[in-house]
Image (cartoon, rainbow, N blue to C red; front, top):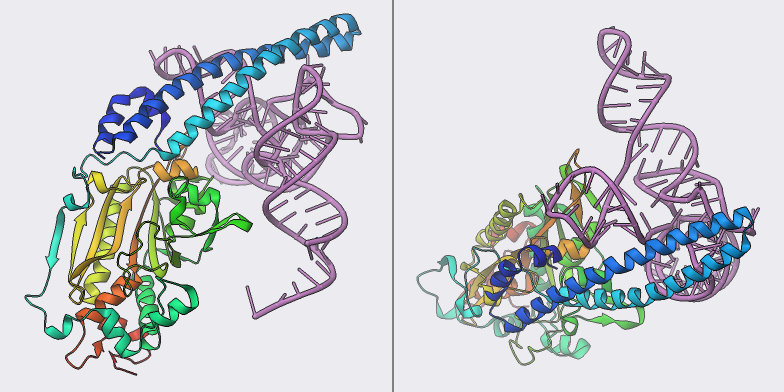
Length: 429
RNA sequence: GGAGAGGUGCCGGAGUCUGGUCGAUCGGACCGCACUGCUAAUGCGGGGUCCACGUAAAGUGGACCGUGGGUUCAAAUCCCACCCUCUCCGCCA
């Protein structure tokens, strides 16, 4: 969430920045939050003063009782009781106003970075690198993966649907191996600087709130209500909260972590879209890379994460481009964001396979991740950044389509060979 | 899931029965200063976080003893619920 103090010191600046999201209701919320903040502070000042009186009188009660002056103690108690009743009223008001303010702040999105391109929606996202495309595609590459993969016997959506329902996929044989190979490749490629973590896939409500999925996007997540747990939509969720509530030392930063995890998404609201094949599924594998940094370290880290994601795609030899997310399309928690898209000739589409984002201190404030400068007093809210190193299903699909040969078999990119148990070309089973 | 023990500051650990000069004894670590050729040892001094007021510093007030409620003039201390940790039992890949 954004820093309430900014609403006091630079409300206009925050309003101007948020206006670039082109979502009018956000500005309404902002003004409401600003008003509530003023109210909260005014109530708190009065409440604290009353509380101070109660504390003072209570001390006197103790003194009188020690001195054996029961009558004086009695009268002081009565006085304090009435003060306490007044305080109670204010305290209730304060709780109400604070709760309302907090709820509002949880829903107000992050301010876009000044350099994020202005735009209304995804059609305004500029391509900032590429596209890197071959001059032409052969006919045998123009076959969608949901046909070619099924023919090869490495994708069994029909039985996945039988087991779990619509929008679940199941890879088999070399297809399953290819999936896992992609994970291994993504992890091994970043192991030079990133600590591998295997986090829980089920998390608490607090954890899912820290990264911004809750309270606003509860419908997108799978809930395990009986236990108060949620299925993670990305490893970003547990990794970001790894240091929640902690005060780190500046010398520990930046912290770089990576994780393979399954990702669960209800895809509420996207029913009927991309229903075929692997493009949009409820459960998929992904390797995420993530960093906790100081505000100063963040811009360079954003570039590093983006470069790393790009190198993976480049290494696979897939046609790709990088786009920057415009202000109107920026996710709630995002400060600045880039997408890597891979071209899939079979379905003739650019597929988003990686999203690299800087969250400024938006998530870290929610998660309460701070750091201390060595030798200095006080704490500073950290910055968080993350990116998909590699989202498996869409890369898998792009490989199936780009590297399909005339005879229907599929060449496995060389960088994956070490993980394929000797399979260099996938043939029909 | 059952039974028991416990959660206090950077760490260890008192205080809880018997509510009140307890934001908290003591020890260790740490920081500063002194002493010392240097280290060690010793002596003296110092601490946290969050919120509000204050342009800021100083300062003042409030809050924080797992979390949330309650009782009370007053809660680390009493009551209730929940969470977590440890030990034993049960179950289990």
